[in-house]
Amino acid sequence: MSGGERAVAVARRWIGTPYLHQASVRGAGCDCLGLLRGVWREVMGAEPEAAPAYSRDWSEPQGEERLWQAARRHLRAKSRTAEAPGDVLLFRMREGAVAKHLGLQARTGAAASFIHSYSGHGVIESPLSGPWARRIAARFAFPEETT
Image 1 (cartoon, rainbow, N blue to C red):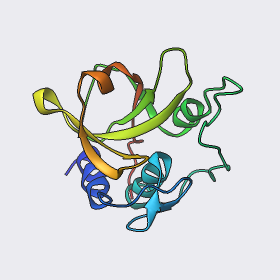
Image 2: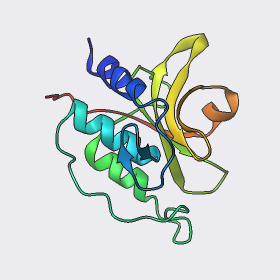
Image 3: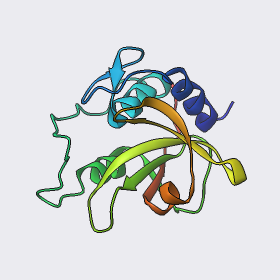
Image 4: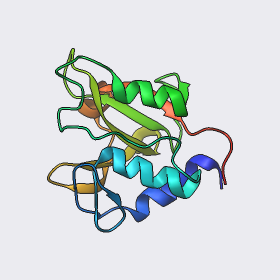
């Protein structure tokens, strides 16, 4: 099983976890970053840095791309079109806003999907439909080394 396939398998075990801002506990609650943190812990080991406290609007008031900067520190940047299972997708929820939502690509091609934690839904696997695909700001892969 490739590292990306392993990340997808781990993320799928989180499906059904309720949405809980700033949490990262499978079955109890997580937000989108908490999902990624949980997958990281299982696939890679210890988290590379502690996540600072953050508000629901992330860094919108300051206009800072904090989530993107953290992704660049710990993940491998990829072309937005080089899709593969297990890729971390960073979304810009509206034009001109900071990227503040993320998920893991589960399937590619015509039936593309991604796993994410979404307010009001918890952890779900959603089709990577046109409206979601248009919001992708960046694509990353986990580092090569896995535990």
